[in-house]
Length: 81
Image (cartoon, rainbow, N blue to C red; front, side):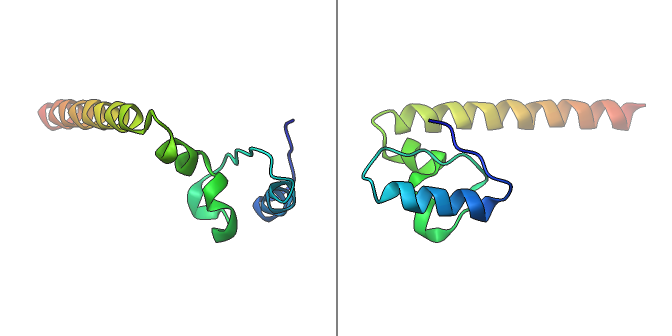
């Protein structure tokens, strides 16, 4: 089931109520905008608890490295021109 609401707090309220039903819930959204009480249902928290957490961490590390390299190359190109 996909639930949507017009604000972050409205979605958080839905998650809090659905969590009482002991169902698996996944809250998508920026972690800084989620209520502390539902952080455990955030995508980041669920991934961190999963068996594949290390794989996800490695992929994120690789992505960050590529972005840093790209930024460095772009900065060099800008400074040359």
